[in-house]
Amino acid sequence: FLSSLSLESGGSPMSSSSLLLLSSSTGGGGARVPSSKTSLSCATTTLTTTLTTLPARYCRNTNRPMTKRMSNTNNHRAETPLPQKEGATDARGRNTTTIINNNRISCGDAIVNDSLTDPPPSGTAFDVVVIGNGPIGAAIGLHVSSSSTKNVKTTTKRKKKMLILDSGQASVSSGSDDLGRIVRPLDAEGRDEWTQLNIDSIRSFDEIQKKSKIEFFEKKGSLSIGSPAFVSRPASLLEAKGIEHEVLRGKKEMCEKFEYLSRETIPEEYVAVSDRVGGYVSPHKMRAAFNRLAVENNDETIVCVQTGEEILAMEDDGRVKVKTTDGNEYVANEKVIVACGYYTQPLLHRSKIDMENLEDVKISKRTIILAKVSEEDAKGRFRDMPTIKYELPEDVRSQNISTGTSIDGASSDQSKNEAKSVYILPPIWYPGPVPSPGYYMKIGGGPNDFMTLSKAVIFEEKKSNSNENYRVLKEKTPIELRKELDSVWEDHRKATYEDQKEDIESWMCSDGDPAIVPQLKTALLHVFPDVQFESFETKACATTCTSNGSMKIENYLDGKVCAVTGCNGKAAGPAWAIAREVVANANL
Image 1 (tube, rainbow, N blue to C red):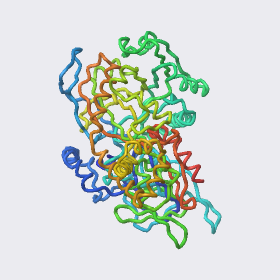
Image 2: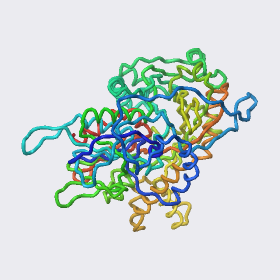
Image 3: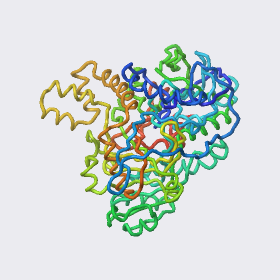
């Protein structure tokens, strides 16, 4: 997605370097294995229609000379929604049939990044190269921009020379191509690590926004609703962390506090926990703020449009270099940090890096709905709406969303929670052209649908031709499965990651899972039965998940490469604190 929009650019070329950061997050996808013609062709019609409607400055052309960096101004489009479409209604008069499939979001002036400049000449060396300019990659760049390196000859210190690679139009599958990502201390699973990462990131926002002059955080608060068991762990952590919060028991208290909730649908026994600390971030504006400060902190920093394709070890001196899809090569003298979200494993595999400790990281195919609300509702009853995590009552779950932990049986607390709940963001203004200008609530959730080893499992099922053997196979862990199939299928690992790379592109070009769309829609109408939604627009998303719900930070090639992935769909909001952990792990 980031590739389809023009981000004004500029900067001076850099000469030498030594660290390569390969950045992973829910978005920005700085690395990409070239996709097949088939997987790219599915987006041709939509992209042609979308891009021809964009003003020239929103259509990135990598052949167009970049300009100098813009002055530090924060563009903002006036909120003037266009007239809305009318759709069919149900017995309550609600729109029930207007489903618009938009597999790419183009947000025009919502995207602000004045830090892009021309790529440096091939062969240039850096202290730091960040491949990936999503929320985590951009945050890594911000942290590294303040660090220094010592000149071994003079023992003097200087700021690290850094290159941040933005995938640009080479990738059609950024995970961050919408305008709202949750950030909250009220972690859905009540995990201490994610709670603290969110708290620390939120505390950093005021200073970053002030210095960058880019506002990316909306402090709306957080709300978790469900059974006592569902909310008890998150609530206890808020108490332990000293975060001011409120506990509401029973639907009467909830609906008096949050008037847009319905007494008709919320179970009487449900409990709610709310805080005023959390909210949501615009991932694009946040990474633009991080980029701007990284450039201001260190004039030896370059942010440019290049897509990492392969990491190569330099046998003569022990350094590493990155090859891009444009044929350029950039040398890293110190380290590579890989944080490319769902492209991390295909990229490491292409680079012939053994990554057994990432074998339990799986890609989950996610579907979201953007539900359009009227300007009156957005600025009226939903004006102060927090982000919501809602445990679906059992009867709603049985009718719609699978009650299993995931489609392939993952058992982490994150997978279990996702299977029985949804998240909802308050109305956010989308300036168009895709989706059409207006205010949209975002809803997602439901069981994880993992793609990583699907074709390997299908192969083994056909080979054995035995339902019993297939059942036993499905009960094995991903690592056990991979090792077993490696032993009987010589090309299994290669096929797995080739399939994965193609699956990613194909999935992200789609409109999501058509079976999940009505389930999410029913869940939204369960929470807000009296809202007149004007349309429902769908899109595909993807996350990387681990078996234990914790993110992975691993090192390779004798410490020259560090990978961060497996953030379980939680990376964008707390990206600043995640990046701090990565940079510390990389000894920068």
